[in-house]
Length: 176
Image (cartoon, rainbow, N blue to C red; front, side):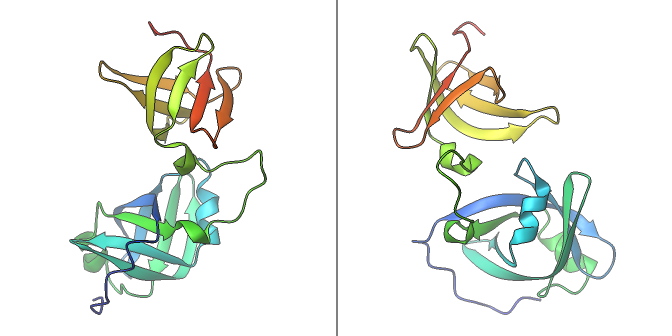
């Protein structure tokens, strides 16, 4: 199995990019449900981390591919299906510093988490807790003390994203 490596430096931010769904085949491949709009972006990374009890442990990619909406990966540290079964449900993550630099008008979903969400009238709809993919389009999951709202993250609903001030403006009513 995995050799006991020291837990990674917890001061470096890890970004969860997927969850182990199940083993794939008998030779230690894992089926991953990606937390990204475009699963092919996971092909960029050659090293991942997964949480085992109290530690984040490193994983090295040997081979990987995307099929439909899933990411399939063979990690050096796993050689059979039972080892993958043991980490089923675990999140996999990548250091934030490993992400490619984007242009000024682009952002990663994880950068929006915790942002205040307001409508065009200036009413607060809550805080963005996460972005999920419904299949048809990404959804902003916005929560306040009273309820959770699912707001499509598409034109013309998503009007602006201000990363500096951690604010998102949407064309959405309070009573939706």
